[in-house]
Length: 325
Image 1: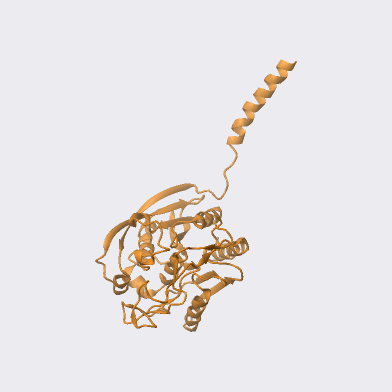
Image 2: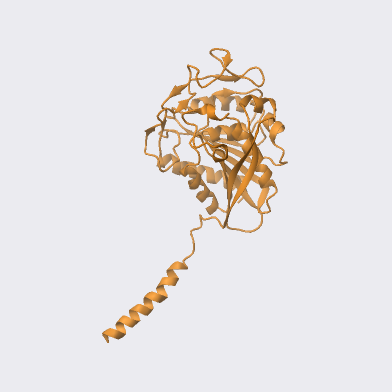
């Protein structure tokens, strides 16, 4: 009898094992993942601002995670910040894929031989990410699983700055050749220290900015001043700020607070495009560089789970409405 019991137990375990493997996958997993080359350039900010295309030919990459579903799906383009692709990229990819929204995460560093620019922002002109973003539309516009009318742009920190200013009609006119426009722009804790010419002439699409009040890397107050100018010009723009959220508040692998040792911040700089194509330090009237006295070091970053959860709710509700899910 004991031997029979052992045989029955063994048979039951053999039956149960394949059943465990066959459990349905989590709904936040992509149905298909593709890596795409993005033919772009590496330019100085002056070249970008003047439409000078004599830059260095560069190939970057984008990871397209196609959500479960059929036909053409909506897409959110994700642009990382100065530290490269961080854990928040994966966090948002999973949130959106679970909603039936595909994601296209852009890597603006590896193809340029960079890992991070936190400690030396001069390694890459800030406006390069905007060019990369427009070039990503060249890929998405031709993809058979992408709905070209439902593509949104979301970026973080340096990538948030790119997501914000990619909305400028002037930049679109100079660099976007895809025939596709973004349905909305979602910058997270962007740098708003620079005033560009005609920067209130933005796309007639919603702009939703998210940031934290304690942010000493890219202060939300600078963005609020820009938003007031945009609202005065009749633009659809909103700021959501969280009372305890530091910079990079949606990166779950960070501690609650961390000093970015040697990290450069322009939080006390006033940078203007004056004249066209030239970025100057308003305090010196000289061309801006990261050696200017206004550039400071050692800002903070940190994870805020409450702000992250609140941002998830707000962003997903916005996407459901805008994408008509």
